[in-house]
Amino acid sequence: MSEVLFVTGGSGFIGSALIRHLLNSTDYQIVNIDKLTYAAAPEALAVASKHSRYRFYQLDINDLDAITKLFAAYRPVGVFHLAAESHVDRSIQSASPFIQSNIVGTFNLLESCRNYFAGLTASCKKAFKFVHVSTDEVYGDLPISAPAAAEGAPYHPSSPYSASKAASDHLVQAWARTYGLPAIITHCTNNYGPHQYPEKLIPLLVQRALKLEPLPIYGDGLQIRDWLYVDDHVQALLQVFQRGKPGESYNIAGDQPLTNLAVAHAICNLIPTLNLPTALRYRSDQLKSLITHVADRPGHDRRYALNNNKIKTEIGWVPQVRFEEGLARTITAVYEGLTTIR
Image (cartoon, rainbow, N blue to C red; front, side):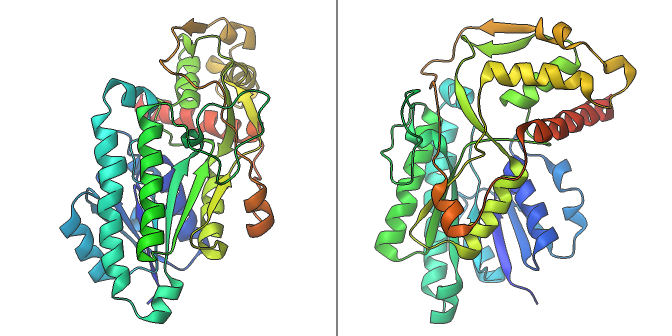
């Protein structure tokens, strides 16, 4: 029987992509632990759900007893922790779910993991790893002229979301230092790709453009984000698990910084060039006329950027998917989703 990996939040956008990648490229058995919130994408795991090496448990990571039982039953060799509330706007409207999921949930998962790890043999302890997936937003707003944030840069979170992720990072670091838990933290830039919930910028703009609806852009739209295709991200996560050093952190960046306004223009330029039905072959200028500047988000950070030299040199990972290529895949997937709904 093959070894087992746990993936928390495996029904979400990044988690489901990770599970597909693990099933396609490894021999691990995968246990998906997800409470299935509004942003879950079960359709992204339609193929995985039929796989002999896949198991799903609808559980909240705050359910300490249930998670502890899963550790005892499956005895995993590793955990990828992705379960989190992740939308900044929602965190501004109501921070409580972010505190409960991202901070308290991480604490409970760490406690279950610590107790399980303490009972392992020396050889099993040596093989075990806990990979905590975090965000570039913990480093906060970077001036345009400032260098990209490297691992170890000071934390300056701006939103309730990023503050809750920073807190969860600190918990992981403390459990690694105090209890010897072999944990690795990764920080990624903005992900995009198929199956992303349409509250995020790219799927929201694509859906609206395909419907000829207004394309909302916060403020002047000159906020800069680095874009990372989700398949590149999950490949990096697996490589970090395989070759990363416990106690270390690794930045995972797409090396494709763009303003939000530039992203909107890219979508408008690309849609007319794709092989979509004639009815959807809109002109780019027609789509760009839909761009609507709306009141800016409170505390909106101007720029995020990560220095990913460490993962390139120590792990050997580099992003493969160009933004235009990944965007084309994403637009096509969103279109297919809309036509299926109809």
